[in-house]
Length: 458
Image 1 (cartoon, helix red, strand yellow):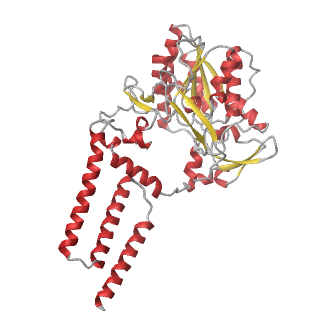
Image 2 (cartoon, helix red, strand yellow; image 1 turned 60 degrees about the horizontal axis):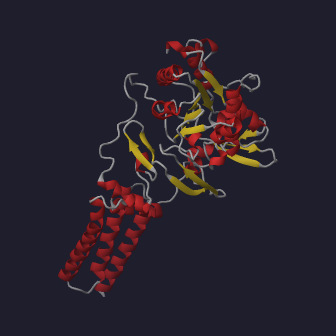
Image 3 (cartoon, one colour; image 1 turned 90 degrees about the vertical axis):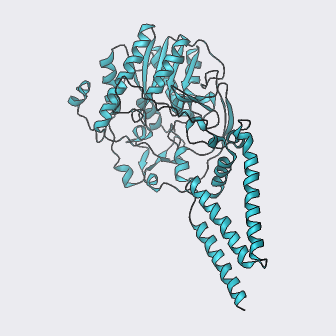
């Protein structure tokens, strides 16, 4: 009788313990290890109480099973330890850094870059904001990414190019087919070679290295530097001296065994199965309704907030000035035309349009700085030879007619947005652009006209 009660109580404890383990989400690999160990010991505890075997027999089985598991796992780890197998590549699991991801390798100057002649095929189903908000997947859009000998998104190796476009993910655009890229549109409209030297995640420091190492060797007549206001400024360290290298040092242990081990990569796969998507509720507040030319409405989500500048941002602007000064000097020495194109965040393009309506009070209260009017005078002070193209105007004009220029659940341009940017670049390069229209008044602007004129004193 007592044994039966004890068995029931043990079973109840096991069920409650399992329920407690299942109640909490897996938030890290370490947390998953703890849960697996707790579940393993909990299962053995249930076996101990329910089994009729002698205790010493159970202890022996526990030791033997545990040792067997360790030996089997250890044997499987040996090929990875010897460098014969990289389980991260084999299982296709992500790493903790850019160069740990499939298709990337570390670089002592650039931190990371694409594997030469890398190719990736897949389907784009949800944007970066959609992932953060756990939104339903969109209609899958197939992509086929091909990279050149230097790891840039050019389908053919290039040793010469009339025009080079440098930038980050707005230039690389890994979620779109090659036919939709602004560099493709520019090549077709110009009828000459255009090199795409954009890499997702790069900032101005890395882009300067790209210019030195890759762009100049292509002997272009024109270099276009795409400045994205969403994060390019934030990627600059405001405390660094101009003579310092801004790039974080690549860890000497980037190829450490843990990243390619079977244990780590099995845990990562297990975590993907066990963890659930937890939406960032804060970003749900930043959305609005956009009416397209066909009369249909689309809900747009926003991420990058063009907030008012802080004192540290002024220091970052000084660093940006230094980088662009060096870039311009390098171009001037070789007789290369230097154009800085300003890529705005989605909110700057849609704010105030008659066919866009903020959906929340928080969205209506978003401030908007005057970043384009800050960057342009900096370029003028560096040299009157530097050309500035603000893509805000053509993108706003297109959006005002109902063209969806930004992906609804992502921070990047749609194929139409790329086309608009490509057409604007073509008009600027060929000198066929129309007379600039006055900029839309900026709400909540931080800097007055007088203060903008004194930016050189930052």
